[in-house]
Length: 349
Image (cartoon, rainbow, N blue to C red):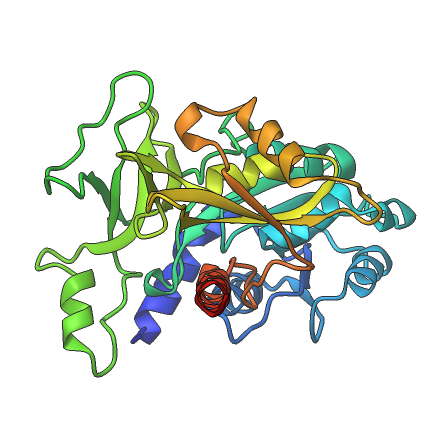
């Protein structure tokens, strides 16, 4: 995609008042600078504020904790997998992290309970933001001073942007609520941080950027009466079970609250009747004895019937990008291979 110098500079200026980085901060830079999250939020924003950057060549939990402790880091930007480690891993208790005043999570949804667990364990603030590469990348963030804003949200839109929610089925704009939370809709964003387009791909650009300058994010969101935005899931990731829409991110967040689950991912797969159902890929905690039936029962007790996990597979690790996003396409590819193998074995038998 094409991001201009103006896009990148604008985004640094937009996030400045929201994230509250100061020259006194020592920021642990574990996210890669070749990723837009690391480039804008860590490298460019930190240098703009004259903060100190403590860099790491790659993520390693022991080195991460050692650097945070020995270098007295104050502000740490992470993706949810690192937040899971900070909340659950026993190694964390062996290091003095009292210098850390803020953990900021981005790149993928952070569950509210997981965020609270990190905040309580480290005695620090936890904040969450939202964005995508096409937005340079930040478009929403919970401000440092906004302790009342739910961690289940991504905060309010940053300065100099316009947002709206659009019903993907009708194309009609979703009404903003006077109380409570709105109906879900696709989030559209307009502002100086929006990309120019996709290099050499006019068709993809036209699908993503409309004539009014709004970028269609492909993410389903809701907004409350105070203007706080909540991301539901990717429009293309929603599992459609018997006419109901099931957000995988919601089930993943719930699974991570189980004390014997270290990590989890959910995708839609076809059952024996050709119905799309939620399948959970689960990573057990070390030495945990947990069955698939127990996982299914755990979820069933806490969600509506249409959101139940129907199939569980235990794996060694959830595939993720360098920025910490779950690579569902890899899980789908693995599932497709498994289905083909099963079909081949059945025909051979």
